[in-house]
Length: 352
Image 1 (cartoon, helix red, strand yellow):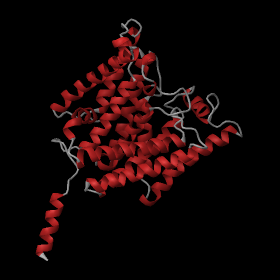
Image 2 (tube, one colour; image 1 turned 90 degrees about the horizontal axis):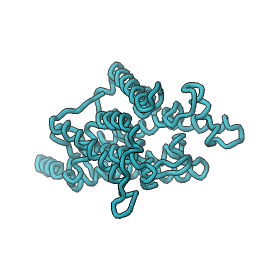
Image 3 (tube, one colour; image 1 turned 90 degrees about the vertical axis):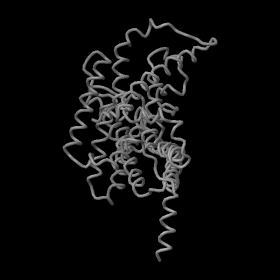
Image 4 (cartoon, one colour; image 1 turned 30 degrees about the vertical axis):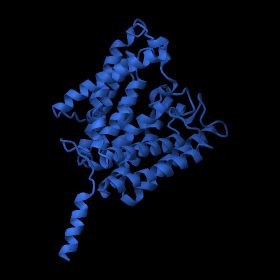
């Protein structure tokens, strides 16, 4: 018996374990969050925006582009962190975090638009986090049903409001009505979109439980990758009936980006925890360790320089305006990384 136990212990030691940084943080989680920040910074570049590649510009209405995948990815990681963090179990800390995110978001939105603006990205994060937290207070067996119920209820709301017309209209959808009542007009980061995106956060929370239950990264990667496959397949099937639309956070968009988020996470588990390539994506890890600090700094600076966007010289390396726009965009990413690098080197992790 003792020999068998020794063999099992030796096998356990040989198995790769989830990679943690010197700070004890889960490296693959920080890295995938850093990827989300990179693409969000690229897509948010304020200079030469009309020359940015199409895949880094959000579609006007229906459709999906590369840039659309990464705010959902960020929310997905928020959900994973909810499951792994002890702080999320405290109602007081949760309410404090929601309030701080919302107030900071309103301040940034108002600075950007030079007037009081209620909706925005940080407010969206705060609202979806709050709804997800409330669902996670329910009995565990009921949580998947409640999550599906949110998505089905929103879908039904769009259908009933349309009354036989186009539920996903660019002018008169259910989201236009609700946001008009609450916010005074349509907003991409509106009320219904925030409630729908709580499903993304909840999906991340459910995957976070898988992380806790599967210490072997190979098994974890296979499990998360399997979820990616069925979610994407279900979303594409649903898209035959419901358009993929980020601005409405439609049910098909919700499921599709939840699936792609699982796929990104599975890929990073394989790269970092299984293959040991963590050094190659160190900058992503640093960006992902302080995402809110980087985002707040980016939005603040962008608001301050937005009035000068027209006077910034246009550049066209090798005659390509797109290359010039991307040069500016990567400049933004570099500035964001420098801030994240300085904070990371000093083991400073700004929490809200």
